[in-house]
Length: 483
Image (cartoon, rainbow, N blue to C red; front, side):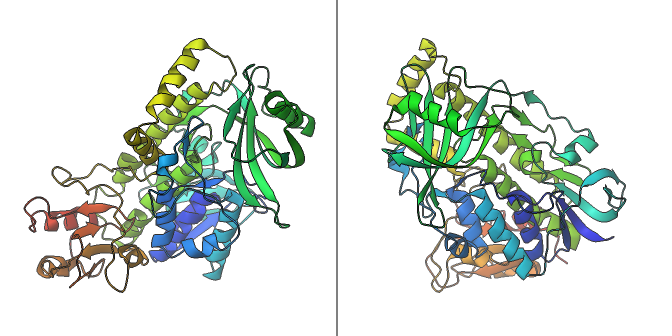
């Protein structure tokens, strides 16, 4: 084998996966067909659960130090959710994808892991022992596993012949990074009486400290072929149709057309090949969910591949990647399609849609509705299907960041091992056989006992009886048989 895992695609999903494999002590090679990293901002928001994951690996503080990354307010279909703003320890932040990619690539390089660029995949075969990848120019790489993180037009997915059902794009919208002048403060989704609309969100500042904005626009007659260049005049006219002379374009830094295509791979696992990020699911970018969903794919898969390479993964473990992550992305596609409908992206001014949005907007004034939508968008409400969830409300959810005296529980996840929080020191006898892959902590402090997977999800709690029932079973289920 040339390496244990070959990761194809050096976007956020591939970079995070490469780092997860590094932490797990698994040799990996990361390749990308582009000769250099893209300078385009692309995605622009990082949700609460993704920030928690970066914190659990000790990366969040350094990432936030890379620039001005303002805190934003969540929205659903352009309807702001102000009651959610201070709900999580790590609120939604505007951190452009290009910043995250640069940060992660430098972080990996500091650990002597470098993206192999200009490495375009042209073929792959797999057998009982591994995967053989053929590259343009005739190069060959042999790995035990391969992960496709190569985007919505994934070469790996095409070579596999993987099913990618869903809906093709029916409309295009403009997405751009701009500097604006005039009254552009506190704008989110603004619509004119003629159906034209503009969405504007903060995107930090440029090197001169001037505010940047992520702008999207659409409406009647604005859908054009995806390859048609976006011009400054087109953006000026779009702004004028909504704001008149109140807002003006100062600088266009980057623009592209995006579609409302919605597709998801039928299977995320194909033998020794796995699909992740946009290679597994594509949708209209609303609510900062695309990049975040891909990063969470990587976090879910990384430790499981590590367990398989190190030989302690139970037989079912790699299959739980599809079982856990496929429903999550399916939910993202549903909520994005609902948001797109309510936002009337094509500017139809359909009175039935307007009536539905009016009613929905009234419902969002309720605290519980805002909290539900926030859980949906932020990733904090994701609950993976796991054994032992009945009567145990924390099992399957992200682990709370408990104060364990000198450390927080999230800090204990830095080595990407399992963590058993055992405040009363009751579980040592049961847990000791797994001490090579599960750390026990929290003795002598007031904390909730729980078993946490390396990706930060609770997989066991004592339950209503507050006893040890099910702990050994959970350790076997997630961490394999003890040596």
